[in-house]
Every structure is written in C-alpha cells, then in structure tokens.
Amino acid sequence: MKDALVPVVRTGLDLHFGRLVSRTPDTEEEPLFADAALTLARRIGEHLLRHDAGAAVDAGVMRYALGRDDVLPAWLVNRGLVASENDRASLEPALLGVLDNEFNQRRYFDYVAGEMLYHRWRWLPETQRKPALADRVGDARDNPFCIEINTFDYVLKFNGEVLGKALADRDVLHWYVRSIGSVVLLPLVTKPVFEFTARLVEAKYKTPFILTLFKSLFTKAGQLPPVDRYGVLVLGDILKLLGLRDYHNAARQDHPELCSGNVGVLELLRHILDRFDNPTARMSCDARFRLGGDPPQSLINRLAALYWLRRTLDAAKAIQGKKAAPARGMRVEERTVLEAAFKQKSILYFRLFDDPNDSAINPCHIKALDKASMVVQSPRGNRLNEAGPGQEVHGYFSITGANRKSTYLDFRSNVLAVEDAEPSYCLVELTLPAAFELTRRSHKRLPLDPSQLAAFEMAAPPPGADWTAFSNLEKWPAPFCIIPDSASHCHIKDLSAGGLMLEIHQDAPAHEYFNERNKDYPLLASMHLVGRTGIADLKLGLRLDIKRIRDFPPLRKKYVGFQFVEAGEIRHDRLVRFAPVGKDGIFLIDDWIFRNSIGR
Image (tube, rainbow, N blue to C red; front, side):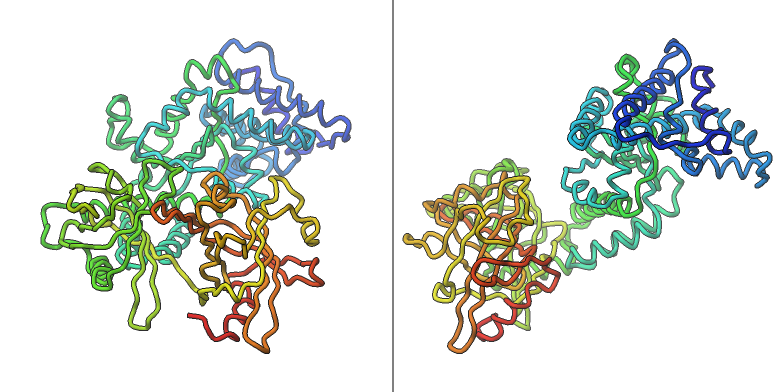
C-alpha cells in the first residue's frame, strides 16, 4: 500500500472501531466540505494512477461524511470477520491483511472516492447538483476506452429513458450519484433476474416460443463457468452493459494473455479496469474509472432482463435463419399469425428505421406468404417502395379471433427486394419475423361520433411547470388543439378508459406539434362528453402522455395515440382534482361508454 494513502485506511479504521467520532458539518460549512470531499476523491485517483502524486492525502473530511457503520464497505468487514474467525479482537489485523491484496486496496479506495463524490453532491447547493453530475459525465467522456466500447457490437447501450424511470427510486438515485464514472460487476444469472425476465417476456410476446427459448438459454448459462454468468455495467457517457464472456471472446484476439481457457471473472474485470486506466486517464485523474458498488436489486433485474431479451431474440433469429432445415419454415405460432392476417386481408403498417425523425407509416397488405419470406403489396407514395435490400423495418397489424376480439402485434423485419410491379403499387419482399410482440389492449374502445363530443381542448405546459397549479383550469396554458374546430381538421377517432386516438389533418395548427421531439412531454386536456337522453354529461380534466405518432402522408393526416396518466372530474367548470390513472383506466369513461351501449 502506498504510504500517501495510509491516512485513508487509518481514518476508516479509527471511525469503525470508535477511536474517532463522526461529525456533522454546519450548513454554512457544507460548501467547504464539498470542496474537501472532491479534493480527497481526486487525490485518491492521482495516487492510484501515478507513483509521483506528492505528499500524503488529508482524509479528515471522511469523519464528516461517513460513520462507524458505513466507513468500511460490507464486503471488507465480512472478509475480515472470516479471516479472524469472528473474533472481534483480531478483526483489525485481519482487515489490514485483507487490504494487503492490491485489488482489495483499489476496491476500498474506490469505495471511499465514490462516497466522497456522493457527499460532495449532497453538500452542494440544490442549483449546483445537476451541473456537477453533468461535469462528471463529461469527465467520463474524456476516457478513450469509455468511448471505444461504444463501437463494440456486443455492448448493450441504454438510452436515457431506461435509467430515467429508475431514478425515481431514491436508492437508485443515490447509487447512481456514487457510481458515475465507474465499472460495476453485475450478476446476470440469479433467481430474481430469472423471475423478473420471465414475467416480462411472457407479457410482451404472444408466442410461447420466446419464453421457452429464454428459459433454455438461462438454464444453460447457470451450468456454465462464472464468466458466463456475469456482466460489466459501465456508467460513463451513457449506460452500457457487456457480458464478460462476450468481452473475453472479442478481446483475446488482440490480447494473448486472455487466451487461457480458464480465465476467471476477477481476471477479466482487472483487464477491463486496466484498459480504462489508459495513458489519458493517467494524465487526468477525473477521467479515471472506479470500481463501483452493487446497484439496487430492482435495477439489476431491469438491466439484466434487457440483456436476456437481446440474447433471446438474437437466438430466435439465428434459429429461424438456419438454411440447413428450410422445410421447417417458421414456428407454428408465428406462421398461424401471418396466415390469419393473410386470410383476413389485414392491413400491415410499416415504418422505416433509417430516419428516427420520420414517423411516416406505410400501409400494405400481404400478397403472398412462403416458408422463407412474405410479399406485401405497397401502394404508390409509400416510402417502403424506396427501401433497399437489408433495410430494417418495424411493422404492426391486428387480427380478429373467434371471439371477435382484436389482437394487435408488433414485429421487425428486413427488406429483401422491391419490384416495380404496377403503376399503382410495388411488391416488397420481406424476411419472416423472428418473433411477434403482443400489444395489449384491455379497455373497451368507442368510435366517437362528433355529436358525442361537446368540447375538447389540449394544452402543452412548458418544461418545469408547476403541475400543482393546474387544479384550476384558469391557470392552464392557452390550448393549441380545439375540437370542434371550424375547419373540422381534428377529430377524436376512438376513446377508451385508458386513452384516446386523435386524428389531425395536415392543415391543422396542431399538426406540427406532434413529432418525435415533443413525444416525451406530458399534455393537459379538458373533455366534455354528451350521451343519450337521460345520461349525465361527463366533464374531465386529463393529463396525457403521447404513446404513438402515426403519419400518413398520402392521406395528409397524423394519428396520435394518448394514454391517460392522471384524471379528475371538472367541478364548477373550473376546478379539477387530479388522481393517478391505474391499469383499469378511468372508471367514469368506462361507465359512460357502457351506459351509452355503443362500445365495441
């Protein structure tokens, strides 16, 4: 152990064994302690990366951030207890013996550095906390290996939405603040992960083929060496997850030291950390990646499930792409779904993946279906006709079952060929999908007649608005979409207890608002429904989320699907008390649809 870092260990032991008492800084002193915590974290990084980092560190700030129970991480205390055979009198020498190991030293110093960064964030004024986190993410981008792994095809990269939802959990938020700029070992084969992923797969996919395949892959992984059961989570410019086995298979081509057949988990983890400790990181300790602590189990489940979903769907595509047994074609469940769509002349809607800002939908119907592909008839004007071989597309359609209920399905496919068949249409050949995702619709839908809608107004509150003020309709922003309108450019196509579908003509003022950039912003709406004679009107205030935007350029229309998030009945034409909308939707709408006896 470096002499310069001994004060960190000594302070930790003194606090744990009661020789030093922890303190709480006064509020006015917190900015000074925030600076001291950042300095200690940086000094630890400098000494771990360099041999000439100067004098010993000042670890005094530790007693203001950590207490007896958390100054030593649980793993270190547990190993010390094992080494001392649960003899408290021998625990301190045993802890020092554990820290004789270089990897354990790094793990402990990285723990202290992470705690310092967390408490620095906690001691900062509220207005400085978000910029401080953004600076740390920027520091992570300065690490070349952090950016390099974005190019590895086996790395699973998560968008902000995945972590954004999880950060609503206080435990996840605090773990994230500690862990920016760190590498975390993630268990991928555990009982909680299996149970969570199995429920997710069963809910998302109609065919049992995907669930059975996942269970088979998971069970097999549990019988393989530990390297196949762990992944590494990287918290840098974005959140990334890579399987250790995938890393080993790719890295050993350029790193002969990994060619041994019995490479272990810790050996691979050290190898990854060494690649993060590159020359650039040694020049700037802020770009150094630490070894992070375990995430909350809820986040482990969520991230590991996405890893297993990718592995399962890749395996499904590989199975259905095999040329050795072409006679088998698709699995029975998938072929049955497509044959039903063919017989029922279902309309298939396609969206191209080449432009994420293009929401244009391309309606088609199945012209022919064989063992390896399907041919769809695509009208002139569809962008699908311009696609080249290999272009990935997203499709969806519905089929009607024996009980006359509709089943909605999503899938992905690739274009094989486009034939300019007739002046009015093209024939597009597509690969058969590996799987279909079931889109659940649990609410009775009403095709809303214009006479049943007395008024509908929609407004877009600015980002950061105080939503508590919107219990009074007089405080709402001016509406940008009003129904009925003089030009009849906007209509509610259908309504259910869970949401509604809005049809918007290209000439409507609201048409340009509904695009991918605005999709994540919640909206406000007031709705006044009138029904049959003797049935009371229904006036509701609604908070809505945009779930889907469908653009039909040939029809010069967009169809926008909304989900109700919060709702309340409007009182005295100006007051509304919002309450969350549960999975069963808004009872008042369900009841109104039932009383009017025109639901389907």
